[in-house]
Image (cartoon, rainbow, N blue to C red):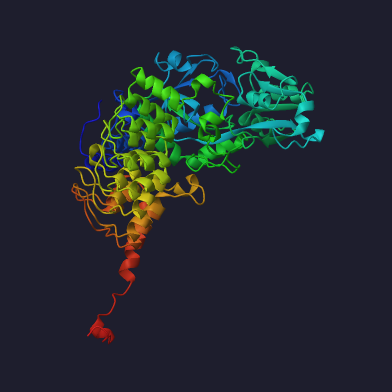
Length: 610
C-alpha cells in the first residue's frame, strides 16, 4: 500500500493507538506492503513521522512475514551457510521479534557492484554490517562501532603499542588484501614485511581463504602479527579460546579510517523497513549486546549505536578536510590551486561569477568569495542545485563563511529551492557554531520550513538534540505547535524516548529526557493537545517510557486528559501492552491523590499577602 497523506498528529495517533491490537493468527497473516516510491530524503517530516508510527505498529503486531537477507556464505565470524556467524544470530533475533521467516540469498561480499547484483535484482531486502555512511543504501541507526586491531600471541612478549610502534618494521605482519590498515601501514613505510591474505570467492568451500584466517597463520607461527578487522580477533579470542592479545589501532591514524559504525542496509526507498528494524533493534538492545559479547566483538564508544561500546573513539576523520588546500602539495598539483590571477583570467574568458562562487563555497575559500562578490556574484542567488550561498555554507558546517556571507549582504532567512532556510540547513547538520552564528545575525527562530515545521520542531523530529538545545538557548518558542496538525516540541521529543534510552546514550550526551526537561524549564505546556487531542504524556505512554512519564507528571501533566477518541494516557499504554508505562501512570496518579491539598492563605494564617 502507499501511505496516505493523513495529518501529522493523526498519523501518530493511528500508529500509537493501533499498537495494542493483537496480531492476526499465523494462517491469516499478510506481509506488510511497503511504499518504495520515495527515498528517505524525499519524504517530508510529516511523512517520516507517519511511517515511523506505522512501522512501530507493524513491529509490535509482528506483521513482517519474511526477512530476505543477503549474506556471505563463508566469512566467519560474520556469517556462513551453517548460520553460525553473529550476523546470523542477529538475523534470527530480528526475525523472532518481527514475526518474520528468514530467507537467505548467499553471495560472496567481495564483488564490485554488490548492491546492484542483490538489491536491484530483488534477491534481498536486508544486508548486515553496512557502514552507516554508505550512500548507496539506506541504513538503520548503527548497531555497533568496531575498530581495526593488531592481534598477536600473548606468549610472545611483543607488547605492541599501536601502528607507530617501531617494532612493527621488524615483524612479519599479515593483512587482508583490501584492508584499510594495509594503507595505514604503507604510510609508515611498512610494506616489505607485510604478507597479504588474498580475497577470493570460495571462502565457504575453503575456510583458509576467509579473511579471518590471517590470524590462524599468526597462531601457526607463519606470521608475528595480524592486522585485522576487530570482530575477527574477538571471535578467535573469545569463542576459539586462543591465547591472543588484541590492540585496537583506531586512534592511530587521522586520515585512514580505522573504526566503523555498522548498521543494517535496506533499499534507499524502503524507509518503512528501516524504521521497523530500528524499533526492533532498540526494543531488543540487551539481546543484541549479548550476541556481540558472546562473539567478543571489540566495541568502540558510540552514543547512537544499539550497543554503545567502551573503547575510546577516534571521532571524525576531518584533519585533511580542515587543512588549507594550498597547504596540501602532496595532494594538489599547481594547476589545481585556484589563484586570483586564474580567476581574473577565467572571468575575462567568460566564466560565470555565480558558478565560480559556488566553487569557492565548496572549497571554503573566503578570499575567493570576497573577490567574486566584488566581481558581481550575488550572495542571495540560488545555484543549480537550488541552494543559496548561505544554505550551502551551513550544509558544510562553515560557520566563519556564514559570518562572511551575511556581512556581504546574504539574507539569513532566505529559503533555498527546497524550502530550507540556512538555520534549518545548519540544524540538520547538528552544527552548533553555525546555528549560533545565524541566530546572532538575525535568523528567524520561528520561520516555518518544509511541511510547516519550525526550526525547533524540525531539530527534534530529526533527533538533533544539541541543535535543539542551542535553539532554545537562542530564544526559540518552546510551546508553539508546528505544521497544520499542531504538534508541539514536547510531543515530538516524547515520541523519541523509550525504556532503553539509558543504554543507547553515552554519559554526557544530550538525551531526549534532557531536552524535555529544558522544554519544561522554559515553560512548555505539558498538557497541550494536538488537533486530535493527543498530549505528550500519551506519546510517552505509547513508547513505554517510564522516565518521560515521571518527568511529565512531576511537571504537572494531567493523566485524566482524553484524546479525540476518548482515551487517557493510561488507556494508550494499555492498548500498546506497555505495562511499565501503565504502572508508572497509575502509581504517580495515586501518589498525587495521597498528598494533602495545600491550606489556603487564610487557613494557614499567612497574612503576608493581605
